[in-house]
Image (tube, rainbow, N blue to C red; front, side, top):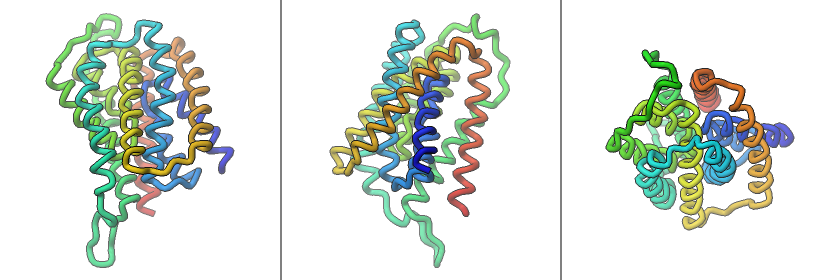
Length: 263
């Protein structure tokens, strides 16, 4: 199982390099179900793994001019503040159990995983909705600043709660509200995810979370190897295929988490 977990660490990086998100969607379940990490601690580890791996991808995309700096700034500022405060104050304050009705109860750990899966479902459906679009090459970015900033705030809070880099939420926001082509949205998402995830991880450190650094650094290093592979593959895969494949991947992972937690 440990060998499988480290192999999946590489796959996490590949996903980040290909679609600018999805790393956290895989990293949290891998850490919890394969490596046996406590779900609350796994959300902290995920922030560091995804943030550090995304940094490498963001640099590569910036070199290719596939980062919209203007969009990243508008989205990122409220998101950064929200994720840091959420990790520092809200997550430690979540009760355990979250819900108790008679003999039935939902613990904090299961509650976090179920909420994580629900957010994944919503993100998948938002990307699957059919839209009449012009060819990607003809689409010019359009900036609905209030909506981008509001989405950044909401994503920051959700990111803080579930320990996800938020790429699976950021990309739909960039595509829907900024009208960014998929590949530009990927590069911009990686830039936002990098800083937001590492700021969230700092919130965990300040809250006194104990970290197994040797394990975390090894897992992260393997994810960085994967992101080089994923970034390379983007030159051979169209934006439309990336978007469709991304949505289906998120949907499948959400269903698997729901089944696991309910069982």
